[in-house]
Amino acid sequence: MTTDTLSDVLRFVRLRGAVFYYLNCGVEWAAEAPPARDIADAVMPGAEHVMEYHVITKGAGWAAMPGLQPVRLAAGDIVVFPHGDPHVMSSAPGLRPRRSGGHSERELTLATRSDPKPIPIAYHSPTEFSVGKADFEASTNVVCGFLGCDLRPFNPLVATLPRLLHLPADASGHWIAPVLEQAVEASQNQRPGSGVLLERLSEMVFVDAVRRYVETLPEQSRGWLAGLRDRYVGRALGLLHGEPAREWTIEELASEVALSRSALHERFVELVGQPPMQYLTQWRMQLAAKLLRESKAPVAAIALEVGYDSEAAFSRAFKRVAGRPPAAWRRALEARPAPTGGAACEPR
Image (tube, rainbow, N blue to C red; front, top):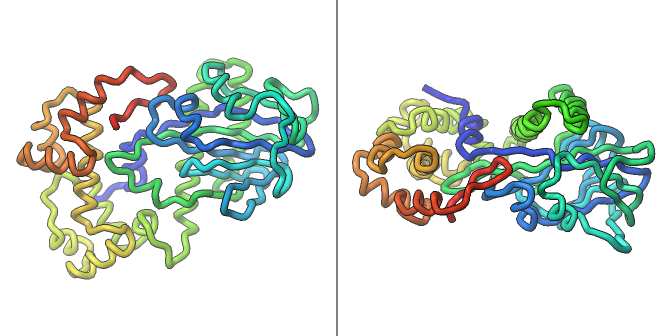
């Protein structure tokens, strides 16, 4: 039995999405995004990790961040910042906001955390922006959103993504910009269900971006996504995700993928960065975390469900990966106040 491993991971790391801003930009403009961690509580309360994305629905622009060359964006392009880095969106490379007064984007985000979304913002120039619909014909429109997910106990996806992920508009992704544009318009006109629609579309934007990124990875790439694409390692990952509670051995897994034990071990470590059985242990802990969070099942029952006959062995493994025993992890979660805004809390 195999499974869609990428979908499996995205389900269990609790991906959450939201569209926050709709930018109406003049001929010359610049917008600066702070580190995602600085505004995480405002945009994705309770999310352990926050990413930002932008979709150019009209016109063109540039995306820039420290340490990388600016990237040209055309209509329909998507740019994602998987590690939450600060960045600048602008009409020309090297252009940065020059605010002579008023609020910065960070202050705006914190001040409008409870306002109905998406919030229209008019960028008149690099020195001026205002909240509300533009009183001019925009040369560029940008939909800006955030994505939240868990990093712990185990998220193999985020670490393997680049700091800036640019997906040009093409035949496979041409639908995103017009659909987002229509959804934003529906939301601003207060049509029923538009808020949930925007949340789901945000998640779809990210999933589509990752899927397309995998398809363009060079042959010499390394990392979890490169492992997914590999004939042997990808099948091994599918088997482990398809039957995580099975009493796998490296010999059985190698036999299933038609490789020798040593060849699978070497290939798996080279691409994924750790041996197959270590990977399986970490993924089991992610599954266990979901059960601890979402059910009242006893720890012993959860141990059995993720492949452990011994509660003590499961507790030791969970503590190694998550930092505390499962019962204590659950108590810490229950002690936290309920989050708002769609993302749930993660014990630290």
